[in-house]
Length: 141
Image (tube, one colour):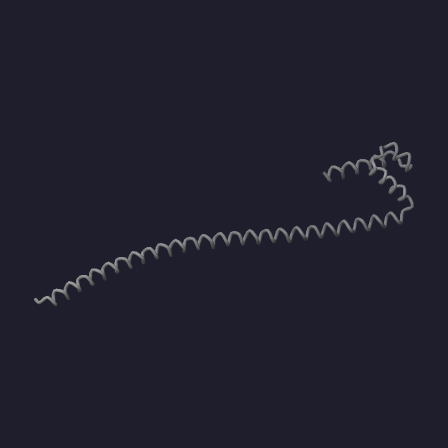
């Protein structure tokens, strides 16, 4: 064997060793990349599950909000109807001025005797007004 063949054989061995080393490094990098991809897939799956959960919660909140708004609108309409009816009754009833005055006295904190005296109301009616005021105060707090 001549020296060129030996050199060529040596170079071939070095190239073969280099190729094997590069192949090994590429395989390690590929495995590392696969592990990273798997981790990212798990993370993505968890994020999607969290997103779906939050989306459902938002839908539930939206539905509750819609129901709440509808209930508020219904109650607002009822209050308006009661207010209108009260206004109608007050304008139709000649005695309503006494009752209106009695309600104002009760709201200002008048006692039973004062309401009866000032508005010429029977004791039962004056007691009823005071009782209603106390109930409304209890609901307000």
